[in-house]
Image (tube, rainbow, N blue to C red; front, side):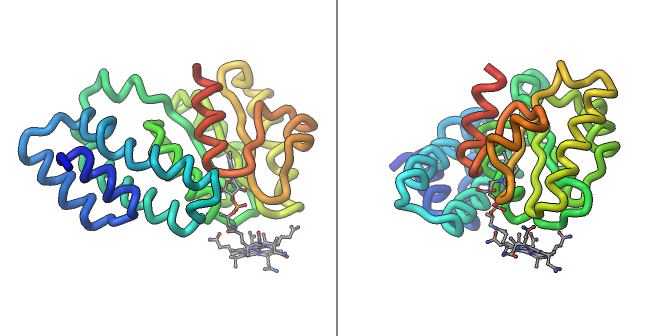
Length: 210
Ligand code: B12
């Protein structure tokens, strides 16, 4: 196995410490950061995705792989040059007002990062105003809203309404997710898409930006 294959295998196996060590060694040895991402780290996650979909891997294992990947990303991301960063598109994500659930959202963040997206995580209990301010600040192309409560899912609607009022609706796609929401709810509130899980979020985000 060469270093890239070894790195991919460590990501797949969720070995965060080994990913961190090997990524650092590759960087110290003069490895190209973009190649380390594309030919190593992301390849590992590409092994995980179909296995998760087929039911051969479960959420905790996917989270370990995603955590391992993010350890590697932390080392190489700061080394990317301006032009390399600008090809990665920015996605904002947050759990809507009144809602403190973030396990699913965090999983979505990790999987989107594994897909090469620049993800800005606004955290939990994020007001419509905060979403709008962040869209402006980061020039985001996609905003992801998470809600786990039947009461707070209504704040997704309020967030989309404010995005529209602020004249930003044509420049940003809105994705929603979380246990109580559905495609029909997405249609009802005028979201661009609903995703049942993190893998679907990565696929839909990729499709929306292409
Ligand atoms: C863990 C948990 C908590 C933890 C949260 C910890 C944390 N840091 O997140 C704690 C203990 C704090 C908590 C608190 C409460 N909880 Co709670 N909680 C849960 C529980 C058990 C699991 C949720 C979870 O993490 N699932 C695992 C993740 C991986 O799945 P997921 O969130 O669905 O995310 C996936 C997809 O939905 C999707 N997705 C998620 N977000 C997004 C976003 C985008 C953009 C996209 C594209 C996709 C996407 O991708 C994810 C990954 O594949 C659920 C029950 C359940 N089985 O769902 C109850 C549940 C959600 N909680 C519930 C309740 C009632 C509460 C409380 C009100 C309890 C109370 N009385 O205090 C409080 C509310 C606090 C608040 N203001 O938010 C109810 C909600 C009922 C309802 N219909 O509204 C549930 C359903 C439990 C129940 N059966 O009663 N909770």
